[in-house]
Length: 113
Image (cartoon, rainbow, N blue to C red; front, side, top):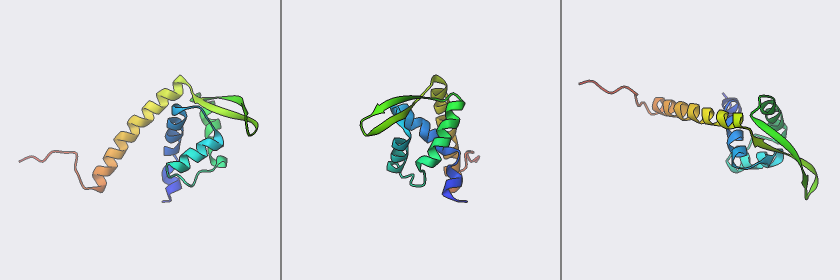
């Protein structure tokens, strides 16, 4: 399984977390993902995700003037997006914990003497 396949469902949560910190535009999201070590996501990958998240009501967008050319579409979280980010974080923490237990052979059950 490729890294891209593994990240498919995770990247949405990462995008929500980045947008939660500050409203951002698409290219800036790609740059921030790269800063965190996600090198395989371009603007062309991100924009369809943003469009879907906007249709689902998780993000909203606003066109703003840019000092470096045409206006940019900035994304920010809606209250529904904040709730989705909280749910994602809970699911991720649980999943990460379980996967780590499996990888390190640490059972969740206590031994009975």
